[in-house]
Image (cartoon, rainbow, N blue to C red; front, side, top):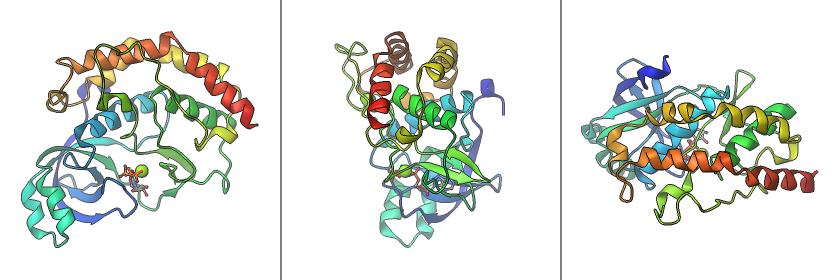
Length: 260
Ligand SMILES: Nc1ncnc2c1ncn2[C@@H]1O[C@H](COP(=O)(O)OP(=O)(O)OP(=O)(O)O)[C@@H](O)[C@H]1O
Ligand SMILES: [Mg+2]
């Protein structure tokens, strides 16, 4: 998969089953490449903003050497709803015609539990840093959004990150210092000192890399933004500001030390 070529695009051919745990009612679908994907529907509660966050943060994570299932764009024909008996699913399919987001389905994976299997200090520290950078408040003990598959950790569900874009304000943005509460983070008890990881990863999140992942987001989703005519530039400014003033890393380190 070449990053400069964009994400692969497939068409959904069959809705298989809903995932019971998912708050946004993601579903397992089969596509015309015979692959199985976890589909995140554009018609779900959080709308396309959640899908934008999935791409920006998931693809950023991949480029920082985290494992993330392949992300694809999935064309969905709302007529698939006809074969679906469940009314809630039927409505979701009808509301989701067009381009949706799919994650390669990892069969036999299960929710990661750090108590059952210790993460390495390095893995834990890097993941804590990534989530603090991207304001991902959705990786806790209760809801790890991390899968164990073939003995490795795989990151899923970045739809709640970059939460500011749901109500961004051009007057304040991006001067506001977004807070990240690490208290419940999955990896806080396992992380080591942040300085080394911060130096490595901050240097790798260049403006070019940020632009590269933003380029993967479909224009059509971005065009729905109600505040910015050029939302990509707004996301770029967020990352530039977040990396220029890393007070949040000091706060993260303080939370870690207090926890140990
Ligand atoms: N690529 C995948 N392979 C296998 N299982 C997956 C994959 N992606 C998600 N799942 C399963 O589906 C569940 C729901 O997915 P996900 O967390 O992405 O949805 P969500 O609606 O955003 O969830 P929530 O808001 O409850 O965290 C996961 O907890 C996991 O068990
Ligand atoms: Mg989830």
